[in-house]
Length: 329
Image (cartoon, rainbow, N blue to C red; front, side):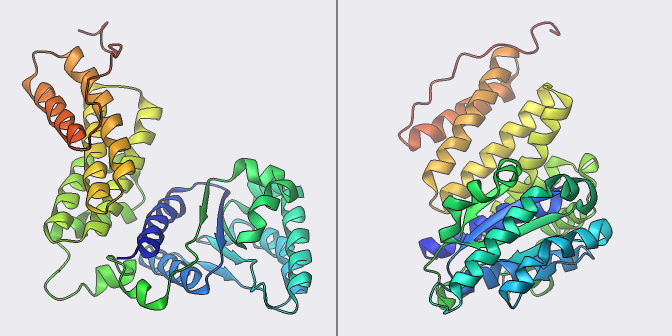
């Protein structure tokens, strides 16, 4: 898989997380310069929504004047939609009407910025804005209030050719679950995790179901599928920690999740991302081993992640950590 196709795959996994778990109004910005990359992400998200019995509302205004009317259209739709809204406000710079498109886009963004309060109060949906590369530096000036509250920003790879898209390890979500490739059938563990995930009841999800599914995806050689599951459960566990605080089980689950992310990122060649995951995991393992020095599992897991970091040529010394359980033991 080429670097650009690999980059697009990572963006898709992150975009899916934000699209599936957002509550209320959420703004996602995608800066693009390649129609094939935009088409690929749009189709994947549409397939994902279909599997959840939801719909991706696609807005592709055909004229600059139609683009200017988009803010009113969004507010009229309100919260009646059952899925994200995908708005394409980008164009080919070689288009002879490019100046008109740029002016319309600027007006559209200014209007959306002015109506931020109404979007948060009445729209209450995920809004994905697809913009040209050239708009990135100007966005924070044209729509400063929206820029501050954006939940996710990505720049799509510019050099993804159609043949590279076909080489992406993980096909679209719909194809992967409904038509798995011969000889690489989706395991029962993966199917069960995705079934539970699509129920959208995060408090009832067991992280160890995700860990089992990650291992199953790796066992059949689908590293991108393993990455998707690993990042899903990592986001879930981070949220639980913020809401519920630190407990030994919460920290251990989160550390195992980070270990899994480190494994898949390493397999995908994303060494810096793998190293970062392992370093964060080391911190959590260190807390647990210091708080419970007689627990052989915590000590063994700390030594294991230290070994992995040394393999990256990174400092594997355990960080000095305060003991959040000091008053409980």
